[in-house]
Image (cartoon, rainbow, N blue to C red; front, side, top):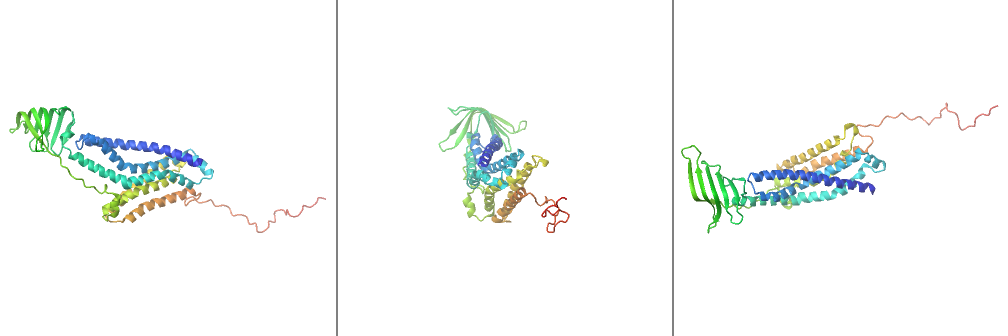
Length: 385
């Protein structure tokens, strides 16, 4: 009982710390990526938080699998370094006895990983795609922010505004520069306002400004001053987003016979299996050999993880190309990983292995015939005269 409690306590503390560190790294990378996309004008800054949540849900199952693997590996490695493993083994706890508490600790992780991989991740992917379409369908004026240059690829414009009055809707100091057109066009105005006509068309009406067309210095360069000038705001194109294969529900993938859908199903099934195998693989990999350095087992574990995860990508592509079936794709990589885990566990639980032979002992003496040189202890000694 003490053995199990101490192990679960240490695993829990390490899991919380590793998960928070990994989540912080993922969160930072996603924020930087989304801020770069928002600065490029691909979507509004208001969509950063929802998109961040969808992306985290997409990668959370892989994050939990890595956290579980590193938690077990680092916890047992510390036990070897501090000689606690020797104490437990000397107390009659075999190495395989660690498997039961490890599986008990990993069970909630495995259930969460399977739920995320099979259900929540496709849902998050679908919601993200629909939200991206909603952001793309918004009109251009709703994406403007004071003090920032914003590029609109659909309209072929670069727009800058100094400020917006939230009560009257009046825009102060507007600048528009056309891009991707044969003749350059620049508009600047002291103020502007958005007007909606009875037929539903929307116009940006600019006041007290000038309009220049052409390249400066050329013969066709023109500068025109205006009191008022209206520019039509193109209506947003509302498109229905068709879900991709990654956003398809798992039940739909089970009913499909297409190779890409089967390959996606292979990936969703492989993540929980890989998490379970890596949990048990960390048990023999945590062994620390003082002669080879304290970090050798960590490097070997990282190398095996990279080989394992990359092999899943390779088999997924082979299934998508109809070169392998789903069952064969699941058996080969996971079967090799399970066989390697069993072999390493056997290697750690045996005193003598294939490359460590027992020493040759001298042949025992032949006790079948009496030794004439030895005294006969059965007869009493002769009495002295």
